[in-house]
Image (cartoon, rainbow, N blue to C red; front, side, top):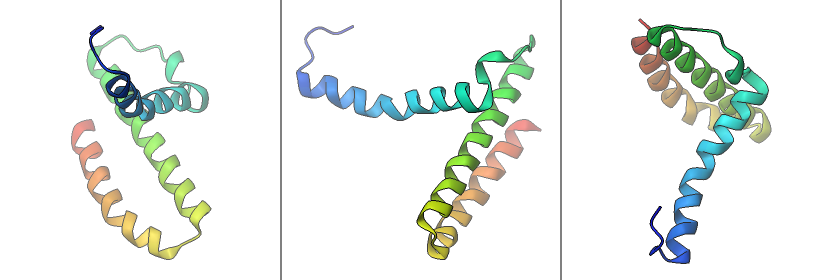
Length: 92
């Protein structure tokens, strides 16, 4: 812990960290991320990949339904294909 950081720098660090905290809280509450029973490193890695992809889908779909915009869907579909390809490559 660096005690010489300014208040603004500390707040900047928390702002960057906040989405990560939200991700873990949502995964624990909605996807039972904290209750898996896997022992192998590969199994844990695959489980985390599946859970993070499920979280991504939830956020993506929530944004589409909340905004109710086909335009948002068109903008996110290319990103979804890119992210999906990454997850599939990592899982195989």
